[in-house]
Length: 201
Figure (cartoon, rainbow, N blue to C red):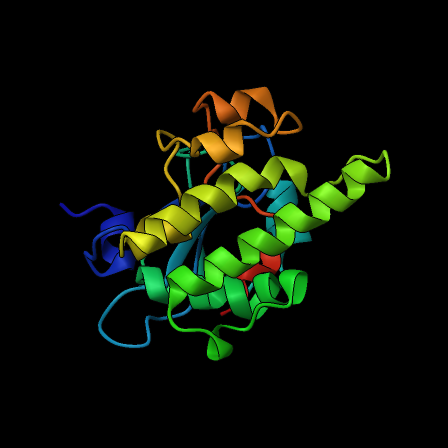
């Protein structure tokens, strides 16, 4: 018998897995996202605890389903293509954060390369002023995404896996968090701003 996840996803392959809420609680609600633009199934499924199912009631979803703690709160199963996920990132936070508009660039590899340069420059500016930038611990994630897009792997670019390792360039930044630069990337693309709003497209 198909599981509820298989039924809600329309038996599609998983396009990405990430955490959008840092919450230690087990989920009690499985929120069904909006329908795919083409074909059967939801665009995403989000696991939420009782508190976040209320606090994040503004997340656009088709329905809520009970869940017996299958996943930790904040886990999102994304069934959109890598390109659709990247466009969602750009629309909802990446462009406003970096000023990089995908429409003005030639493909996602160029977009993420330019965004990576912007973030690196901002971290360098903060360091020169003797300040810590809140963006510094996101450089490794952006670097992995940039390199994946260069290889043409947009799914990995949209949600870098926990086993992916940032390049020596990123790891050579003394400011980067040690646990991220040793390959312990425990969150899937948890950039600043990539939170509840990301699920609205």
